[in-house]
Length: 112
Length: 115
Image (cartoon, rainbow over all chains, first blue to last red; front, side, top):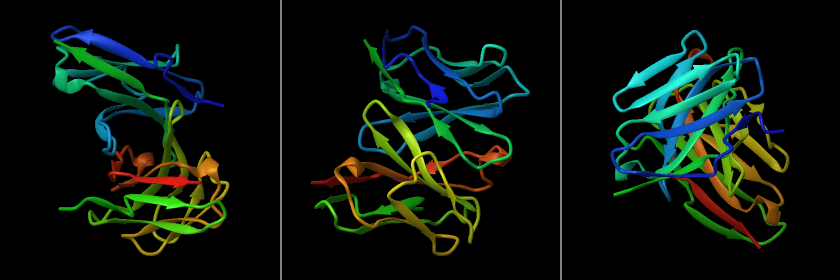
């Protein structure tokens, strides 16, 4: 039972344009969400997070939006750069646990 | 600063053999985690340890055991390896834990093949 879903396995975007990565969750107890980026043969690295008391969080070129009623979050990257090409994972947790559940990932390719 | 260090980086086992994946962090973090990554499955939590002396099951704990040896070290043991355990394993740590809105820091991964 996949509680965190990333329905797009891959996304291709031109350099300079916006990349939008989507994530849906099923567990209404989730109240903290994170995005991670992963390059081949490396461990995932933290990008940005958002708690359920907010609907938006920005960090430079990265913005995460949270729609609690739809159980949906998205990561916007503006402008996209070739170095952003990687696999992006969203992850979620419920407030009373240290357990962090990841989605299946979306491979982003940014081409010139 | 090494961060999270996993050993070995690569291992090939035969079905039925046992082995232990070692993980150590030098960031004085309280929480530690073991994940596996498989194609199309993302990262799945095997076990985690919220603090020294405690361990809890994650999403896919069957076939694995863990030991939180001390605050720095968290090992993952396969008692009788099966081909279904062929995967890339990641160890991670967190200073204050996810329930306190922390983040995970990951190691570089250990690629395990079971023949």
